[in-house]
Length: 169
Image 1 (spheres, one colour):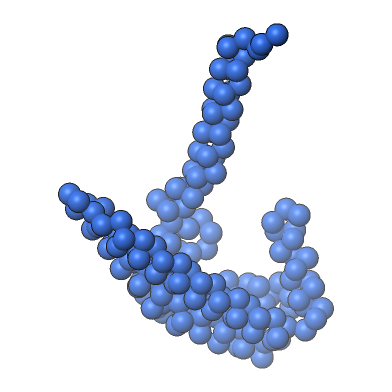
Image 2: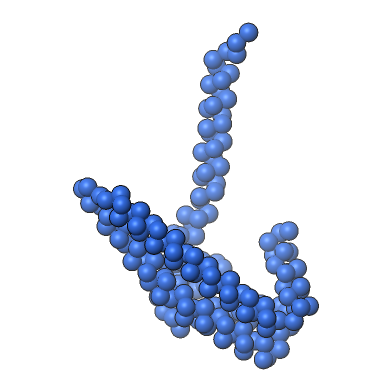
């Protein structure tokens, strides 16, 4: 015996509603973070795309976070200074990438605003963004490795335990 049409329809409508709700709940925090910046998270109310606008302010904010982490693991003064140099170096390396990212974002917006846009140009810009993301990721992971070398094994273990608690694991 075949299934009534209303059962299949209800299944697809319910599934579609759940998918839409999941998409909304997934994207909503990101939209909030983009619109409001990260003011509640120690970044001084600066929007993510403006974080690197002032290199000295960015270094100060990253330095505060670094100092907080080093206090968490009872880092020595020498370790704190080394960590601060690493953090400042990351800001210096990421700043030009942030500028390129802004340029790509603006170029994509200009392209899409045209009466007849070029899909190949959009794809080229997308590929450039992927390269930037890869470079930024490589820079950050390298800095994390440098910081891990500054810490003693027991400090790294303590930091990982703290991070797990912080993230609710």
